[in-house]
Length: 328
Image (cartoon, rainbow, N blue to C red; front, top):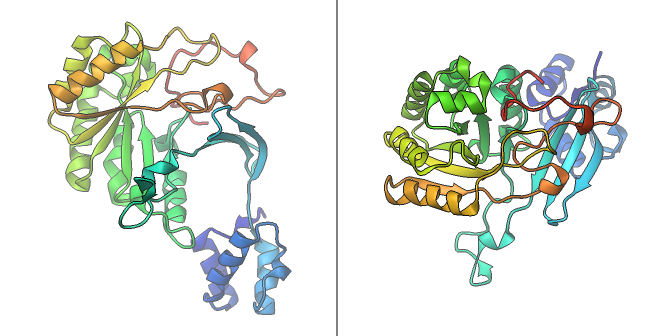
């Protein structure tokens, strides 16, 4: 039987109950393991002997292993290649944003420093296509011992309508980010052929219902592609489409992967003009994503597991869809 993570709250509580062990020991185990990640179970003090037996038989401190670490030249971005318990590999990126955001005139802002941890579920793969595992992971992160606020967790999606319809009920108060990328359906399908399964009109209706339930802003991700979706007419179309919503639009410079893509990124002048139209004419808060980790393929759209014995950029098939929504 595969060993379970000791941080899976529901599993460890159920096993302790079944064994007749008091659950009050669980927070002590979590605290010790977090402070001593390489410890043996016997190192944890003051547990009943039956707890040590159960931990050895059914749990591990971590069920995944960091296989490789890549540091960006920007000094603030790290990409991790992680091997999961089943042998599969996933990539994750740590981005350390400007620490001065929590300061005013060189001093901590009133009310204390800002939180230093946020979690985003996104990348080369569709989180909502793995819905049950996503919900389980979010529930682990928001429960003890991690207790990350749902408002600091963002789920990004290309627009899986049936999953959006139930997301708020299953895990309320999350941030939802939608990879829109175009204001009309035909351009959206050109950029993301898989979007044919999710008509824009139906997607916007689903987002309207989601916002009505959640009463939260929705983040709109819009990748800037030269000559495809970055003209002034596209900015006006997007502004009109989003007028009924409370949104934040994030304009994303396109990050190519080698020479595999037919797309190129928009010029800075086009990005600035696009942002100005949305802000000034439609009063939509619009930001431009800061590029981080491009040199280690850790920027937006670049997370593709690349192992010498499994896959390499040189023999990979051309990318036809900037959002890969296949099950990974």
